[in-house]
Image (tube, rainbow, N blue to C red; front, side):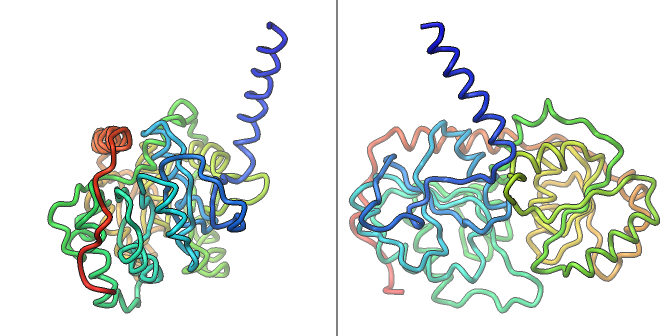
Length: 343
């Protein structure tokens, strides 16, 4: 018996170590051939599997809060098998992350037409990169229809609720900050300024020029990350090795600001999408520098010194998490009839 326990503890220890290095992966049915799909949970979660950590930290936070590991399906999959979903699951979670980018309109329209499950929407937000044309009328109607029949709805800012006309939506920080609770004891500021940049919006040449400017003007050592997972550098390692050692964060990524906020680290956000400005407006603990005013970032210590840090709104996340956990434990409501237009 002692030997069995020792083997189990050793396996758990090795798994924990590996989790800090390997990229996060979920049981994603979009990666499994149709004939081999098996439901491992009564809950299915729809998320974006694009390999930046901002798509994974909300899912990890949700799992921590509900103490359950839902099966998942990547919303980029244009061939989601809703017949399989409706047969094998009782509850669906949509979130978290930026699942309200116009690229996801086809998902919302299909979900509205075809999904019959009790639904919770959690931690999602509008994404309209500068220059975007926005959502179509039909796409917005589909989102409103899904939200209207969902049992629970949480979005991450008031701008999202206003854009889609969600008068009854709960508004609170991204569930990422629940995931970050486990990293609070790991915080060990080491005199670093972390630059978190979005490589699909900010080119590598721009990033290099910006880093050069930072290094020439700041007394802090500079680290940088594009928030992408790679083999040997998974989400856990990025958070622990890059964010937890930072004294401050300069970011063009929303989840650069969210992770800094959740860890109690002051940040300078450079908005390439209004979602970053709205996050700052709702939750603070940072400062906004517009892209046209990047000369200010050369005085990053002065900017950081002007920030008034306030309490992290953790209770909002925990409260909604308790609601979802209780909801999962209840028999689902009848969603066999889908209301609204054929979109």
